[in-house]
Image 1 (tube, helix red, strand yellow):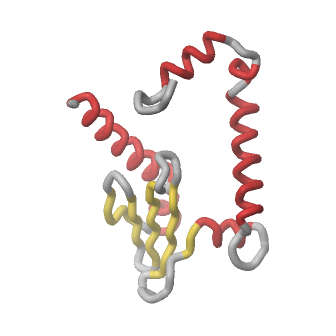
Image 2: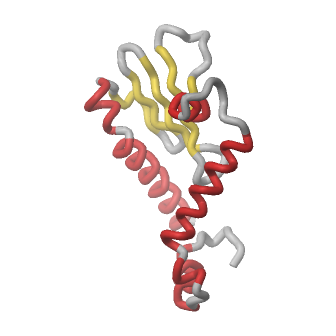
Image 3: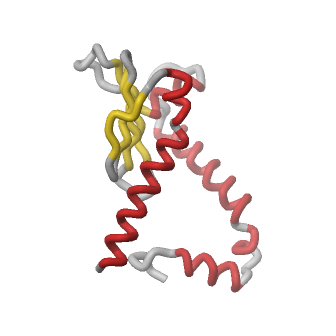
Length: 138
């Protein structure tokens, strides 16, 4: 039990530190500060805006919310809207477009990191299994 609690606390710290490190540019370039942080969310605030990085429903999913501080009734902007801006399109990316992006990202990870597994290397499988969480099937 103690080990499980220690892993959970460690996981919370990893999430918070990873978000703080990755989003440090908010503080240095845009004048934000960390307003709150817990195991599920790190929230940054400036005089004009708020940014929340939240753990999603899945263990490795993230949700992003960007909102104006003076517009409490406006919904926050999320990652789909932000990506749509980058793509030069209006509105949300369609489910098909999001799926296509996800497939490309997963393929890139498999191509970059999965070589030994794809070659059927038993040692690579043992190392991968050793990193698997106890709650996942072996």
